Amino acid sequence: MDITILTPDKEVFKGKVVSVKVPGSAGQFQVFKNHAPIVSSLEHGLVTLVTAKGEHSYYDIESGTIKTSEEAGKKINFEIQGGFIEVLNNNISLLVRGLKNNLENGK
Image (cartoon, rainbow, N blue to C red; front, side):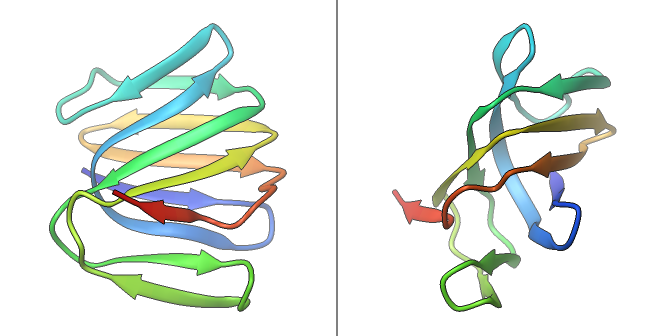
């Protein structure tokens, strides 16, 4: 799946993922390949991505730069204050506000 995550002033992640877990308004939910089309509002909470094989780029808050990686299976977590998600044909768009901390990378 391809995903793009935007804040009002910058792109914070773009690339291929295996899954994404988001804090939906009606509760947390996870999106996998071939998920049904959906548009949902997001609440304050944690977004977790699991990267797929292929290049992905993300905004590093500490350095203020875009970094790239190709590591598959990497979990990337970050906190948002709210926003929206759209899923359509294995393309995911997240529009978020209030990105509170750096992308935390780990397995």
